[in-house]
Length: 512
Ligand code: BG6
Image (cartoon, rainbow, N blue to C red; front, side, top):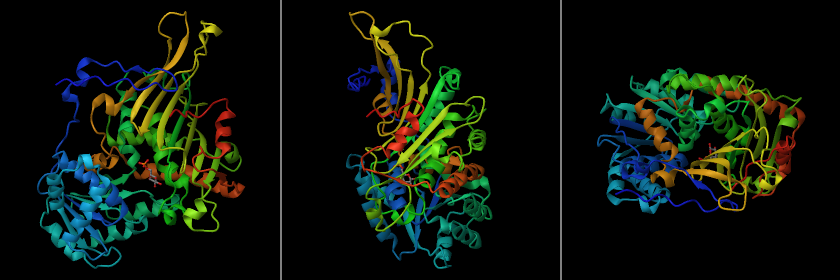
């Protein structure tokens, strides 16, 4: 049954969007589900299986794979954590996590039972030898299966867990390890963590997750740039005026104060997520969509970011802290930033002189992440003042919510009344246009690990190059005692963040 074309999006700020014109068969049912590629049987060992990440992200992601029929019957998901628990108890806890974090409309009793059937639990103390022999006995039952060790633990434990994996000879040829950020708090600590992992796993078996790389729009950025002839000729300083990357969250630090206060927004979000997005926008075309080809190009970008030091840190960055942070933290004093805005620059022929404005923060007006490519104005206005202002074109890639791409164009106001110009978005909302549920980032990334595809994971040298840019920035904040300026929850950060961009005669893109 052909699907009805999606309705036009409601008018945005009084302007009528024009629908993305697509071939008729785009809406046929064959496009309504993404192609699902099955994987070979695997054993997934989740260290820290009773923690937040497993409950909120990993188990729901695995549930969706079961729902899609992508998990072979012999897959085993082995929870490993210190808490003494039986497999049945673990299954009960997993059921409740999935029922909480998967929308009710997507819950199917038989699928849930099948997924729970894959689960096992072994009490393992990663800091001692307790439980490791039992884990080994379990894994020995499938010596040839792809083996994934997912370290959903505190980063301080990465080295210890890897050592024990080796000591108990669990690091078979087909074993790989997945680690979550933060990889270190500085270049030095990141190197220590990477060295500890490297003593057991070669780089081609290490998967460093930056879950932003698993988001649909981020991958679409690659498709847009490198599968269309239209954008690449314009993708440079001759045509791009500036780039904005915003990752805004409405929530505060919630229960994560212990970790967050020692990190701050720069380490928590910019060092990884925002710099990764910047790299994908700024990198040169890789020769192949191959893990090292892509990561080589991203690395080159990280290496040529304009250094920020004491002399320019005040002009190029803003720190903020939402009012109420100390109460959330339960502390009397803290200078940790929950908001940061930065004017970055990529020192290459392609990008020289094009600012990349980055901002991220907690307790902002809404959850909204997007990349905005703002093009230069037309060189000459032939229409005269009566036609209205010609607004420069913008390409907006929305990561969340409502993943999609909008290309803002000037068109003639339809109908009689002479030549009046209107700024309207050519709009492609992915969910509407394709009628599929956008998978959570973890869904894609988990199976990429099983398939051995490292393209969407950070390589060691990338992580370290990012710290090489971040460390001097932090040192400059400390040397100049740059304060974390207070901002009201629900605002777009301290007013200095507006000034950072408005000084240059530009504005943050804040379309609802
Ligand atoms: C994590 C940060 O990496 O990303 C969190 O540690 C943040 O502080 C989260 O809330 C945001 O991710 P998402 O996918 O909700 O935008």
